Image 1: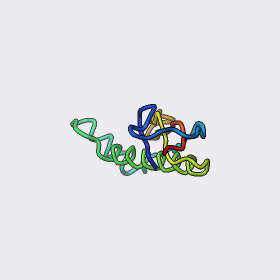
Image 2: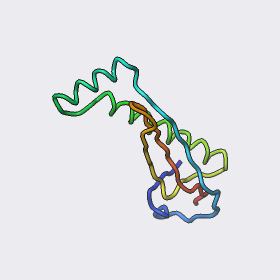
Image 3: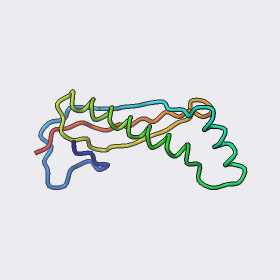
Length: 104
């Protein structure tokens, strides 16, 4: 699957538009790691527990978006974007979206 943030794939021609595709997930950390992350805010620095959580969430959301595109018969996703939002303390939603197409 080709995934690009642009509206075209260099050197390829869009043959068919399959439409909007998306994938999302909501992730949270367990209470033990949440406490460790909270302590890290006191001394400063990177909060690795949340960084790991968000990286996993991005990969899950992108994977679900690719599954959506493949189900529609696409071989590329154009105008790919990621968006996040907090849904509660310690939990975030990640959504990956774009336009599914067939390119040659």
